[in-house]
Image 1: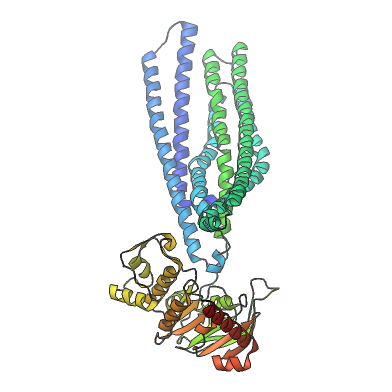
Image 2 (image 1 turned 30 degrees about the vertical axis):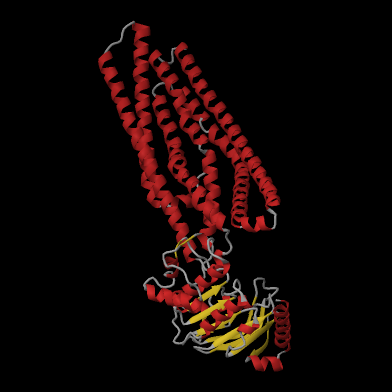
Length: 565
């Protein structure tokens, strides 16, 4: 019922929790004081038909009520402090962890799942710290305090009430195992629904084009119906558990009242003691009853915490610390695969000298993009070195500064053209930005507002702007992975010509169109993950069959296209 690790995760919230418990306890003592005054006044009226010392008794009751009001306010403030502390700490820990994870590790988590956990999941944990944990400790303290008071009124009744109090947590524990599994399924279905919603929203244009939006709509409705059903099961479970706790709580309070009446009838307690015992009987069970009402919050918090800790426990790839003296890239006997039983690359060898232009060619699925990802360190691998140092051992800051990867998915952020370009170099002036756009073959106003991911630009404009941003960064190593796939052949030729004129850069160009690769100083040909040859365009035409066949096929298609046009 109490997640110790979660409590230790936010130690700054502990003082707020202590204050909350203290002021709740003080508020309960004030309530008991008022009950004592009422019992005394009622007993005096019944037995003596008068109230002795009514003035000071009313003053005590008024003071107790005022103190209770103050204590309740302080408890609320402490709860707010604990919730804010927990929310800020947990979100910071989560975001810090995400920022430290490598791209390969981060790819194990869906975007919507991370967003939901940072939003709804954190809200559940916030309530867990603000309400459930303080109530947990207060529910342990309050019955013991009332038991001590009850001993002076009637020991037998006090023991009976104390024995009945644990029946509430026993009923909670009885449903905890079932509830934990149910809430785990609830969160799983919740994240699944979020994944589908985000995916459908992002791909809405594609769905419209292929007229598949109605089918996805039906699927979304099915997933929403599953979520509705699991939500209703959670609510039924909560209502049933609350009914059981109410039965125990009110039944126990009724037992205390009956025992008080019996004690008075048997002359084991005075009228004042009997009335006092009747009034405080319900207070024995109210704290534990409130804890039971927070039970679903606790279980939701536990489910969210499990997902949070799954992220926090994700292994981090050890960051390298070495700095290469040169940008020479070496690939020796590289074998790598997403699945160890089915390697994507097998025994690949490649040497790229600083300032050299290297192309990687091959059919789709031959491992070109995978090799590029390994060279830039996006995925860990043995056999890839820069400056004689394995990529995994290089300082990631150095890698980010010296290697730029531009693929067909270069993301554009909402903002101006200039703001997107300055992501490459925050200190770049307007002249540098305009020069980069000219090289990329795009003419846009620097103050033009761009929508999210460049939705108000054409596909070609998005790729050109992403290329211009890469040129603004001016990294020594530039990897172009199908970076011009969304532009026409003529535009692609002009862009590639501008790229090839970049001086002093190590260029790695990946393109399905071999015509853009023929001027490279060396071309690596991949065939089914293996090196089929490496050399100049002429050398490969003469001695590499996969390359020559691919070249001839593409030339025939281009000639056919021109003739048709």
